[in-house]
Length: 477
Ligand code: C2O
Ligand code: CU
Ligand code: CU
Picture (cartoon, rainbow, N blue to C red):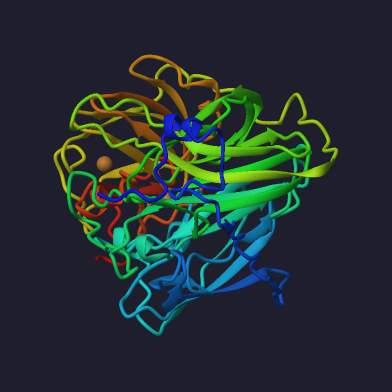
C-alpha cells in the first residue's frame, strides 16, 4: 500500500520538524474553506437555500492528476449552510446525480418527513424541498446522502457539507468563518494510479480504509492564521476511519463542543477522538510566527478486528508574524452537565453483531421501535463484535458510560453519535423530540457506512404519548 500523507510522529521528528523537504507531506496546498451558502429571504421570512447534487465534478487533489467527483453546488463537497436558532429554513435540494439519492440533516431535530433519510428519495432530475424551524442551540451539524444501501458510495464520491447553527444567546467564541472559525472536514480516500478514487467502498470488514487524508477536499493542506485563538470545527466525514486529533508538539487545547452543542465548560485536552459522523469543536492558542502540525495519532491496534487507526498529518498551521488578540474562551459555555435519567426510565437494548442490530437487518418496511414524544430513555448499545459506532437521528443524547466508565470530559456534552470499540457496551441517556409524524420513521445505525449499507440500521417512530396503535409507514420502501 502506498501511503501518501501518512507520516508518523517518529518520521516527523526525524525530519526535525522540517516541512519543506518531506515528500510525503509538503503542505503544498492552501486549505480550502467550503463557501458559505447564499441564503435567499423567502416570502414568509424563511431563510431559503438551493443545494444541487451533481456528478460532473473534476477535482485536482493530487499534483498533475484529476479525479472525477460528486459534490453539492460544485465539484466536491458542498457549501456551508448557516442559520440561527429560531429561524425557519427551507432548502431546495435538486438531484442531478445519475441515480436517486437523499439529503439527510445529520444532527438536526426536525419532523421525520424532512429528515432526508432513506424514505425521502429524490429521483434524478427531481427537487425535494424540506423546511423546518431550527430548535437547537449553537452546533456543528452536517448534511449527506442517505439512500438505502448506497450511502457509502454517495458520501465517498463527495456529497457532504456542513450546517452550522448559531445561537445569539450563546457564549462568545471565535466566529469569523474561515478566519478564526475554521471547519475541518476530515476524509480518507484511496486514489488509483490515474488519479481516480478507488470506490470499492463495501470491501473488507469496514469498507474502504483510505491511505490518503483530505481536509475540506484539500490534499496536503496548510492554513495561515492571524489571531491568537482559532476555533476548529472537526467533522469526521470518513466512511470508516477513526481519528485522534491533536498536535505534533503535544500542545494542550480546549474542547468546547460535542456533536450537537456546547460543553458546560471548556475542557483542556491534547487529543480528541472522532469516529465517522462525530464532530468536536476545539479552540487552539497560537503564538506569533510559529508553525504547528495538526495530526492524528492512532491508538495501537489490539487485534486484527480493531479498526485501523494509522497516523496521519492533517494540516500545517502557520501563525502570522503578528496576531490579533482574541477574547479568552469564557469559563462557562452554557451547556449543561450530564445528569442520569430518573430511576424507572425506559431502557431499550440494542445488540450489535456483524451487520445486524438485535439479530435483524434493516428492513425499510419494518418499524423497530415506537417512542413517545418527548421521552427520556436509556438506550444500551451492546457491541458483541468488532468496532462500530451508533448514531441516532433526531435526538441529542448523553453518554452515561462506556463499559461502566463515564466518557472523557470532552465527550460529556450533547451527542448524536458514539464510538463503540470492540466488545464495548455504551449506555446513552436519549432525549427525544416532540415532532409526532408516526407514518415516517427516523433511523438509528452504525455510521461506518459499509455497515449501514449492509443492514446495521433500524427505524423508530415518535408518537403522541399514550398512543397504542401500531403505526404503518406512509411511504414504504
Ligand atoms: Cu449521518 Cu443516518 O446519518
Ligand atoms: Cu443522522
Ligand atoms: Cu459498524
